[in-house]
Amino acid sequence: MAKILVVDDEEIVRVCCKRALIDEGYEVDVTASGKEGLELFDQQKYDLVILDLKMPHMEGIEVLASIRRRTSDQKVIMITGYMALEHTDESSALGTTCYLEKPFAPDVLLSAIHNVLKE
Picture 1 (spheres, rainbow, N blue to C red):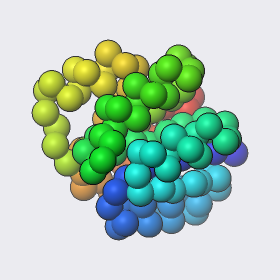
Picture 2: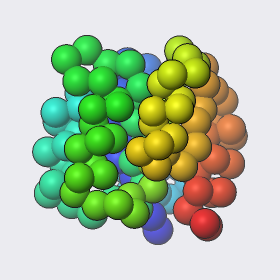
Picture 3: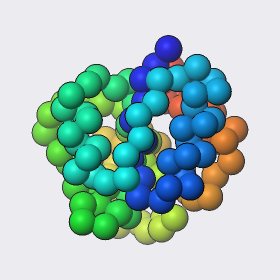
Picture 4: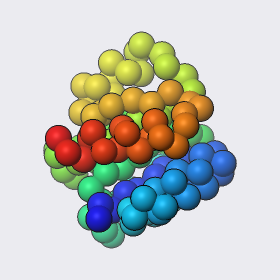
């Protein structure tokens, strides 16, 4: 089963994502910051990264740019409560696979993951 990294500063999002993904059989690592997310990313291989756009200290765009410097083919789902056009354009240019607007239901998350992983 696929291994997924969830990077989001909101604890409720991390807990809900982890619970939904583990129930579906995915291996899941979660972290609250971009810096910690990149440290995990450097230590392990992930089939998918779920990344929050707005986080303190290091925003999702910065994390995504760092991921792209490491590998060009990493699948990334960007999640955000702030669907601003400039951010979606910038992260699309960096290769975001899809977006989910918060709050989202577990079935929406699982459907997005399924679609991204089968590409």
